[in-house]
Length: 260
Image 1 (cartoon, rainbow, N blue to C red):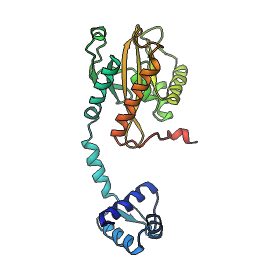
Image 2: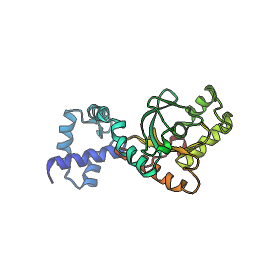
Image 3: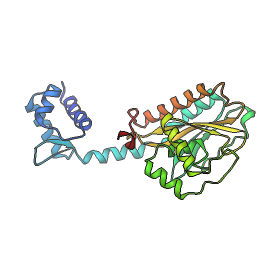
Image 4: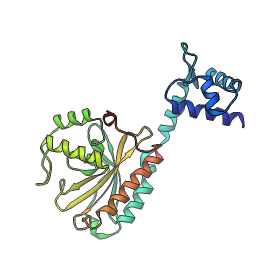
């Protein structure tokens, strides 16, 4: 086994352990001689790629790696990653498809793709458009996956204007609605923002498993009907998972409050 491969194996193990690890454990788990593990760790320690705990002499990941990870994160453009997938979803569903991020307690559309069909030309979701968190599927699915204390605070402090007779304007009812979205993993807009218009949204997660955005399709009530709802949910959810994977998400991660 080459020296670089051994080094990567050690770093992989330290990153997944989420605690300090001793030379003996690394040697046994990775089937490497103690002398080899010690030599590699000594070199990594020199450059702050790993750190050593004085009390136990165990090792953990070092601060230098933050520099590399921050550089990588800055190079990742969510919009650039998501756009080909947005286009595909728009083509598959025939519906307007858009990308929403969470900014200052509200959803903001940062990209949108429109179908070539004239049927949906009126469903124009403008880039930069604010999506109300209490009635737009795109924002509801993001807020539903935020820490519960944050959700409660936002609902309590922010106004809940009524857009249609279906808009939820009662804080307790909205909280229960968001908890259901949190549980099922996707959100609907049932003519809550605009009469005659429905939407389906799914959450996009980053490398830490945190919900940072959403992908949404929106269309006429007659097109997003019960007959094709399950199929559309599947398409949108799969697209959200694909984008999440490209952002480094390693799969479903329990929300903090759900661990209790």
